[in-house]
Image (tube, rainbow, N blue to C red; front, side, top):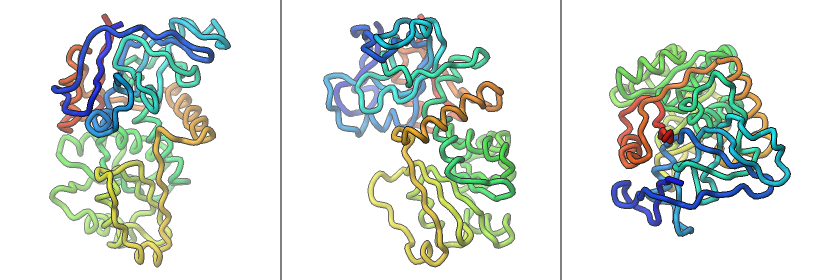
Length: 327
């Protein structure tokens, strides 16, 4: 099969290779998926540059979509021919979705409603599932004011939609006019240009000094300092799913203690079985109801995977980057 891979950390141009690899076979409990698309996420490019390489080759990317072509022992043959999207394709395993075929446990291949296209389906494993879990952890947000950092990002765009559907008032941080329009289209009632405006002062103005009820955060290294400004009201909640700083992040302990702030952190790759099942059920319902907007920023062929990775790293595109694996 055609695949892209790397064997050492480094820049996309230096380490990504393209060529033939052995087509996998499904083991017991697994399915073999003929992939039509592969999603490229920021975590994929971070893994290529920094995650220790412990196998001879790493086929990158965790997200993708396609059709089940074969099944292993114990998997109903009725699944053959089923359109699916996959999650955790390259989490704690070396062979991800930047290739023509992937074999993985059958529960990681989720039935895809007929009206959802393969490009959109390549955006579900990390962006959409992260959004569903983040909003779940935020609790009952009806009537509450929620700050979404990075509201125009792939995850933030889904979060803003879900919060709006649940009756929240959404404030989003953005970096440009184009990203502000994207965030508003997802339901943000207010946008804050974090590069040129004081986020804390704008929140105080929007909420008339009360602060927001919840912050759903993509970058705790930047948001931590915000927690001592009154931007988050007493007994408020922070739900965090990432940080641009992978090292130690200082927190304003006294401000958190005296305001009884709740911090909730999660990693979408490592959800508990109960949370994973609940998120999959919720997302399936949303897809069946066609209740989500999916934004594809750019599509590349597998031979242009270097350009796809560089596009994600540059951060200028609005929406998801997808690899088209159709021959």
